[in-house]
Length: 460
Image (cartoon, rainbow, N blue to C red; front, side):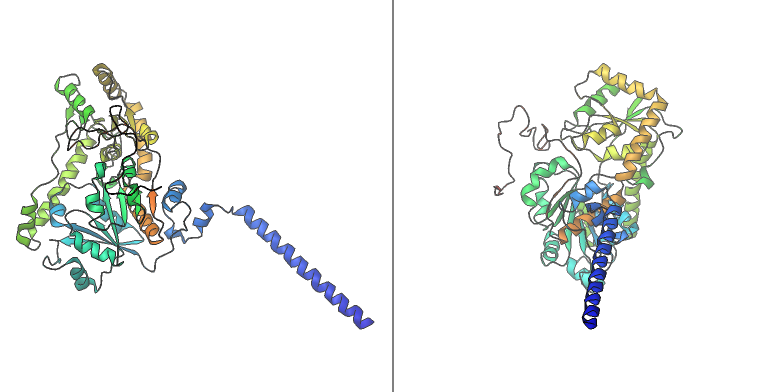
């Protein structure tokens, strides 16, 4: 009997210990849940710190494919080849791609190389793959980021073989304009500067990442405080044509003497030479090319310097209602911008500019410009607020974060459309280059259905 009681006591003791252990674990779990809520933000915190995307949570959710798992750390830095051509590198007044390259070089998680046809150590008689194998022993790069006159067949062969992710960022993609790059080059990560163009490419997003990558500016070139001494008057910037109706009105007011404190900055053009001059029979790189690169950089520096001397900038969003790069550059340069609002993120741009109605009278436009030229403290305060918004989101360093997000999404097969805010689809031009046609939201349109991409199959 005594032995039986001992066995019973031991069984009771074991049961009590087990029960206490379960209660303890439940208590610990409850404390854990109270301290760290199980949210998407917490899930992202599980990723090692240097791999957490440097973007707001709202954008991160959008960029992760509506709930896809965060990107896992790579075995090495993301290797990105900024593939370009001597023509663009020595001639084009670029304010994006080459600054993105410099930002990528600064990024702790990226190894960046700028290379391509006609650049130093590139054998123009060999294919892209042959050049990469000769220099690196393999294709080597995780991403090939395109700009300019690049051989489509050679790039697509590497992308189709799964040896690298092909990425491309374009400014204006109206009227399916960007299909001429998207399809021949086999682009996997397609970045558009303007969200209003993105719905045109819905039918091309099923096996690729189509994402918004807004315009940015380089602070080392453009940033200046609004209180910078010597600022005076208003400056009209940008090309003047029917694509920019409000700019045409600004110019008329300036030329007619209605805005005596305003002047026009003459657009220098984008290219210093022709493609034939840059190719020059396929010759190798030479010292004169360095001089052309320096001249290209001076063009951008002169453009920024002109902004640094102005209190107010005058331009518009074009007939496409685009948030042009000038919006970002102008605010970063410390200028107050007077313009209509673009259709991308209008609630944000209303804080970046003084909005005007393109249908305003001449007297109303003149009064608005004169007011802001004579109220310096109010102007400076408004620009400082706008600069704080710009510097937080619209630098080329942030664009590299977006590129990394896009590549990670593609690798995880999180295909789709990645927007970064609100936008408006409304009556705008379709293609001012070919004609004056307007889109399906205009009152004079006969369309009743949203136009599908050419040769696309409707998704039911």
